[in-house]
View 1 (tube, helix red, strand yellow):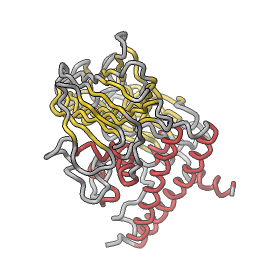
View 2 (tube, helix red, strand yellow):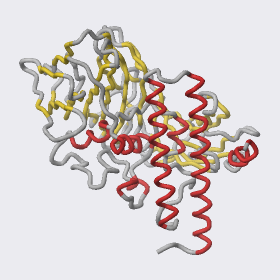
View 3 (cartoon, rainbow, N blue to C red):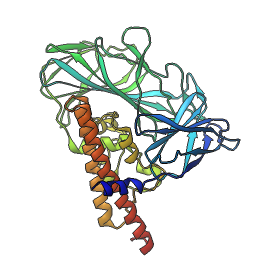
View 4 (cartoon, helix red, strand yellow):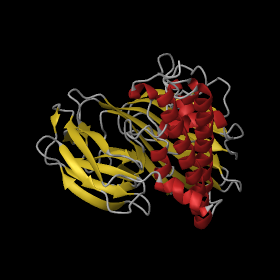
Length: 430
């Protein structure tokens, strides 16, 4: 068994070096003089090697001998960091960067979503808040400063986890930084062109009812509160919440076109936990760990559709054309945390290394089997991270189970790669 596992890991060995090119998409010219770092993820984010781009934006990173793990390539441009995953087998990467400014015209808040429930004792509230931020600057710029995204938490909140997801990227840890004023924080994370997602998980002491007074920092298209059906929601006298009437696994209240000065207070009472929605969780996890298939230039089946609202057959208005809340609800309903294993996020991402064959290359039976296994693995990784956040696993149990899942996932990816190679030799399947 040990020999078999060693064979699996050795087959993913990285090259001796990783080459790449960095392009400044603000100017559409090569980005010369940028710092480039290879980061090892096996035992935390450790620097493995570094270099700088030349005048044509090119670079070469040396991979230390025997270092066969999962890596990130980090490029720093205008003080903002940009990442590309480097799964085992990566030989080259392309990185896009942007010029940065403290305030960028075209940055707006798409949605803030609060998902709350009590613990089993009913003496604490567990809350997950998600922020969707849109950057439609022209020419494209990154918003970055000592406080690129500000937000408020309720008094007494104890933060349990937080993360950020860049456009087309993967989840990374991002810790909130206090700004001096009580309950006022910032994510020191660049707001790149496209949609950036932030998530923070925290708990509050609870005695059966609690009043909230959310504050948005910029005009926001949609503010949504989600909670178990067994709990009660009472909006403030002037708060603009309306219930979402469709049948879901939770009750949801939405305010639209919210301004920073607008009253958003509400009171919750009672106890209850959100049921796990397997389909929604799988769809949500795909959205956090992978990019939209259309961004890769190919078609995708419903099972592989990783957009918010995708992966559930025909999505309900996934772009929010008729209902702005529809764009986010399925991504949130599954309770997915962005705070998932970074390594797992890389392995499940459609990264630069062709480790997962697509249905256009693989036989339909092989593709369906691989897709089903990967979907199941993503669900298990989601469940593992959830159990850790809720204290159901010790640190040693978490590490042991995560390592086992990664071994199985690596083998699944390897089988998919071999099947793709076989199909390429035999000719494409029509």
